[in-house]
Image 1 (cartoon, rainbow, N blue to C red):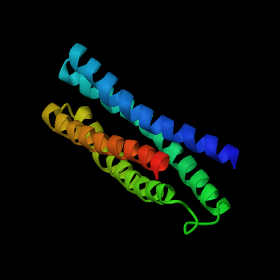
Image 2 (cartoon, rainbow, N blue to C red; image 1 turned 90 degrees about the vertical axis):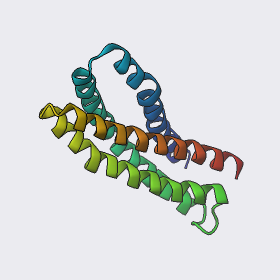
Image 3 (cartoon, rainbow, N blue to C red; image 1 turned 120 degrees about the horizontal axis):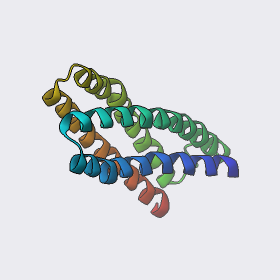
Length: 147
């Protein structure tokens, strides 16, 4: 149970920390130093690598989360914070899969075709959805801590 808890926390930290880094450090630095073609290419490539990490983190989160819920007596025995974490976590995963399999492939296609305005629009859509997921992740941390 302790190993599941540690792995769960590490996976959540990777996902939430990565979103924070991308949104508040990488993106502003890219805007400040790179022209749009280079910035869009950098972000498309960086997100591709990050999304692979998040996909792995999601597998770990689901496996360890389900394990801990079952070991704790099931969903009915789980405290409200755990139930909220599970439900909102599933929403976050759905948003992630939409970004990774809907928006990001379009971004990469537009970058490859040098369609910079279309690429910028896709990157902005991804930015907004990542921000939504970041807020949801922070709310999960608060829910699990206080409920």
